[in-house]
Length: 211
Image 1 (cartoon, rainbow, N blue to C red):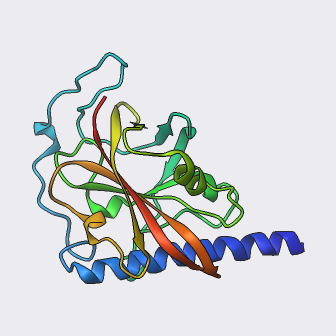
Image 2: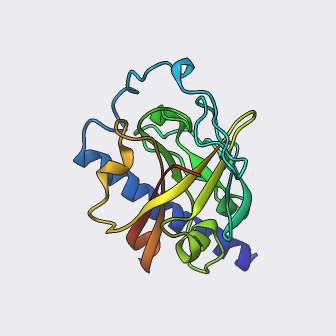
Image 3: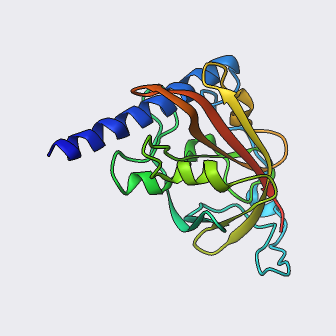
């Protein structure tokens, strides 16, 4: 029982740290998550999927992600879509052993894989004991690595173009971009754990459609 309670406390601390940072960042850029979704061009005008030698397209019509694979880091990993809270903060995975092994996709950002511009917002948990998906990403996901995103009837390959580490107190407003080139934007807690729910830094990966 004590071990179970400790697990819940640790999970709560992890979520608190991530949510606090997500909450802080939009206030630096008022045009981002609290604004209405942008008037994007219709997805029906997107290019048809183009296959590459690896069998993974780099273009597709917009689709909802169901799994994400990162070779050398994780096999097909489920993507869940928790709603934003009452304050408009992107949702995070649940406080459970299953929750620490999945990605959360912020559907309310209004950007999906295959859209022609803007960031697909994703997050994952980092746990102090090193057992969560975020820990594996921190250890093994680097610039140039491939990320494969699959939906019900579509898939896209991405390559990491940038890995950024920032102080939690600074945040990174461009994580929330709804314009510009299409990208995945994945955030996890990182750096030192300073206390319950308090992490020193955040690490963000940006990845563009590329074979």
